[in-house]
Length: 387
Ligand SMILES: *Cc1c(COP(=O)(O)O)cnc(C)c1O
Image (cartoon, rainbow, N blue to C red):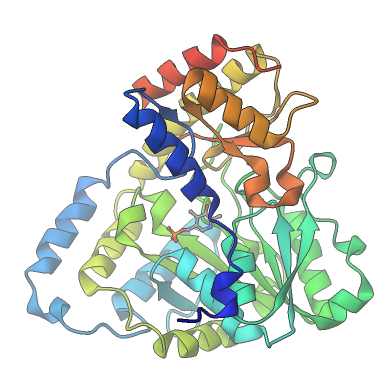
């Protein structure tokens, strides 16, 4: 058997290594507390589950769905966009439901990256931007996100010869893993840059509904001219505690949406319709679920940030997202810190370099740890001297 080069060259998925270390500890009877993976611990709200129960009984939902999704879902997404962001979208040409944002993010590369083509990819960043690019035969040119630049990319630093070959620019705010947010002014700079260099902008807005202290993350499409150059990914996963149901959407420029639809129609056969019914309920129903979840995460954020400051780490309170990003003590690597915390206190954090080389020197703590475990984990961190 000869495995394709693209598979052989896959880096080991960071979380697999961590899972192994956790499993080993647990096998020894040790209670491991994890701030590792960003998967909401809160359940899917019951009105959304009710919609699934109803839809499951309807034989219409037992057949192949359409790639473009139910028209009611596309209309509900467009109506939400209008209410939430004041943006008008044509539900038939500017909205496309997805089997999770991850799916759309991976597949968009097939639409705009030819072999040898280039995508501009933030580093640290969600790994799928680079993986999708690689599967399409392209290369990622990494844009380092740095603390001194508020974790925004320095677009002017991209070499001209790279820009000539580049077709996609990835951005993601509220950002995973750094917790940074971006202003509309930054999005407007991105639009101007994309027009100048003929780039498709893909904005990953998976955390638009997870804002703290009254902050409401903007849409990229609110920037003047954004609809001419790009699209935005949203997900029901983080907004409605629906990671397990796999549903999301891409919205924006119709040519981009159409290209993604055409690729997808040759790969998948759409989203199970009963799950589309859940999404309609989620996005059209009472939105207090998102504010209640955000309030729980906000309290956790404050607890985590306070505990990290107390042991002397450099950390900022994120305004949005599900993560706290902390600088490890001088003289330690991300891996040293994560490994020692796991060995000494059986607490898991994610080493920042797992999101790209520019994440070295940082660790990420996810706020999706249930409250009692979170308190126990913070107690262990308080009892520990890192340096
Ligand atoms: C969680 C996450 C996603 C994936 O969302 P799904 O809809 O569950 O696939 C995409 N982008 C970022 C930055 C994420 O953190």
